[in-house]
Length: 257
Length: 304
Image 1 (cartoon, rainbow over the protein chains, first blue to last red):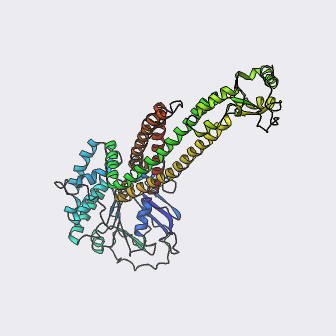
Image 2: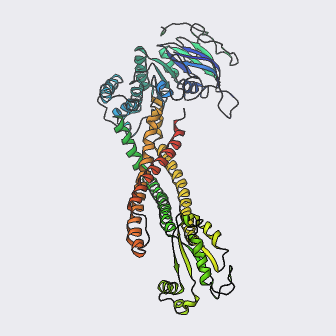
């Protein structure tokens, strides 16, 4: 589904790499938390999966395509297979809930009939039925994030990327959002979520990838925000291949297919 | 659905940047008016050239008692010398080049002079004795006056051989210079217009950067993102082009046809049909300019 091979990303004008020979494989249907301090490279990884950036060295395969070889003309079509959710929602303030979700489908050329069928469905799925004609500023933070999730999944993407989707929300609302993401994951969508929220990670007990200074230091199935299995590994140890079964604390196979 | 969406985006962009759009309209209007005027001026010059060059004659002036140039020597040409020139004009060497010729004696020249300078003080100072006798020659090909000049200049009693086209050339030089000035100004204005369109489109893209970001994120194709901005630029430039076309047609109709051709009835001027030929050129130039500069301006937002 997503495979990183020895990926290093150095941003221009900086000496220290944002990602340092990261290897990672995410399988279809997995739910993966990416944890780590700010600046540890979580967002850089998400950007690379989206092909908003290209790696300095190494290769990335997403959905069977080598992102280094995909032409910039094809990138928009590639992105139609991905859904993205952000901490700051990124809704269009001058459009209603319905139009915000419909906009996604309009700009990729879906028919009016399809839009009028798909949008109410997805709004019901995220629990926003009856709020289609509201504007974003009339909604609570949790509801706005539900709109953003609806927008991300309305086109039935194979992969959902979430960059700290609960970062602006209180714990109760966050759990509601997580329930929604789990439901989307249960329907077969691979979810890759970067987060700081220890409570959520501990409660869900899913695969956890921990980044420190641009390196993967832990890849644990069924893990918590801080590992209980083994102490945190020193940062100078490079894990050559963090594929299935290679993680240092593979205690569970939950969520694997 | 998509067309309506694209047109909606265009309308929104035009409304949001109204002042910039107005300035684009004005700059393209003025620059294309200059372009149109320059084209019409060139058409006018060509028209005058073909009109006057065909009528231009070569004058073979004979010596008078006062002339010192050429083979003269302050003695007027004798009838024998004049006859000799006429024999040359009739000779097999020159005859094929000559369409017609006639002799103008002093009395006729004096009458013509009086008519031409009627009311001018110089007319009362001139006497028939001061006038020059001359052969007026119409050539088959007006550009070949040099042949005549070479053949006749050395003959006794000939003061000079003058091609009238040399007078016309000065006038045309002035007209040419003014049309080149107009083209130069037009070129500068077009550069300004292109930059202004690019800036307007950048501003428009900046004010819609949220939408652009989401469009790119959800996989809208580059062409889909680009099209509204290009159309926005083209619409603004086309409004300017239409105004410029109107201005050019108005100049021809009211100034050239309404004023100039009334004042100078014997000269032929460019007509409305020439102006209408210029209109599609202006519309095409405006649209092309806007499409290219908008495309360049927006491509920055499409990099992935």
